[in-house]
Amino acid sequence: MPIDRRAFIISSATTALLAGCSGDFRGNGFGGDGAARIDADVDATLAVLSRNFPGTNQIRNKSRGVLVFPYVTEAGLGLGGAFGRGALRSNGMTLDYYSMIKGSAGLQIGGQQYAHVLFFMTDEALQSFRQSPGFAAGANVTYATPQQGATAMAETTTALAPIIAVVFGQQGIRAGATLEGVKYTRIIP
Image 1 (cartoon, helix red, strand yellow):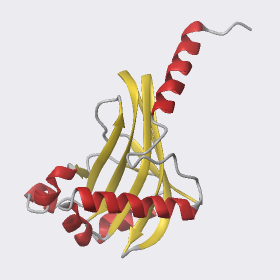
Image 2 (cartoon, helix red, strand yellow; image 1 turned 135 degrees about the vertical axis):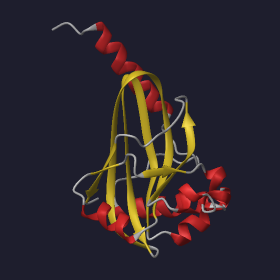
Image 3 (tube, one colour; image 1 turned 120 degrees about the vertical axis):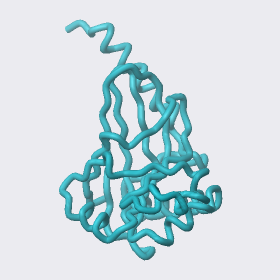
């Protein structure tokens, strides 16, 4: 059976792009799938966020829960996708583990790895997320760049937002990282 040349090129390019994102923004390789490893990666990611963007500490302290994805790998060549695993925490305790997937189509090429954190600012937002069998990020998420962290809580739109997302530590050659179309699903690591 002959191999379709276009399929071969696309799969080879995607493999190469993902290989280029083989480490995280702290210089480590991909984490394992176990709960202990996810928790350790979440701790390290929160430490980096706090140290490099101290303004986000105010958001974190006011939040009811924090969903942290230490490593999200995203690649695209016409069709694209992203995947990551993380933990939902409240009061410093891990409540659940989640995976996130994202699919996209259109003019795109490249790959990157980044971390992202969702801050649930109200009990209702946190409960709605936890009760959903597959929460999809969309219009109910407000984005704050880590650099905005110092002023994010002072801004009316951010201060009133039920969910605030921060994406940071981009590493790779694909521009931009959004959470539009991302689906979160509870997992057992």
